[in-house]
Length: 228
Image (tube, rainbow, N blue to C red):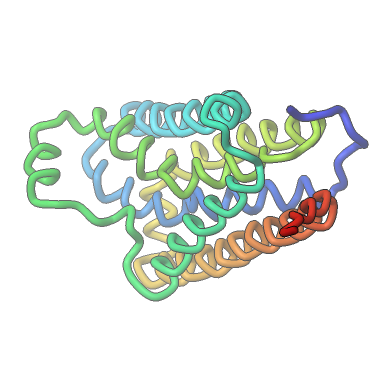
């Protein structure tokens, strides 16, 4: 369980906030949101943006709050979650850098089902979950709370709230944002976010390796077995 610990540094708070912004990638999400909300009036657009942001934020906060209990219930360690988070986020980053964003993939069945929904229904699924709060986002949150102090835990929660508010502001202006940066600008931003995510993933893995090394150094030596 987390302990109180010293006050988190500004670098920690900035790193957590920028990492969450990169994995949420609201700029790229705004382009998809704008294309799916064509013809909506301003009130409906804002309502959809609010629903999508709140859905993603709720999922992230729930995972942040119950993450420690999930660790305890299934017997996971913070070290294991660092490695899992690093691998999942690295996969997402590579997809963004060298291929299509996995969030934009959909099957023919999903498209057929989506065509039957009211436009505002998209705000919760698939925009809130999994477009914004997908496996990469939730695993990043779980990795961030693994082995932190209570004060760092609070910083993570505040960073989630700040990013969700920023995501809402971007989504509510999605048509204007997409019109300003265009398809090329969206692709460039997607690559930049992928590059940052790759760095976040490697830092997760590096922290995991360091923690594993410390555990191995502190572990008592195995008792020698006599063969007489």
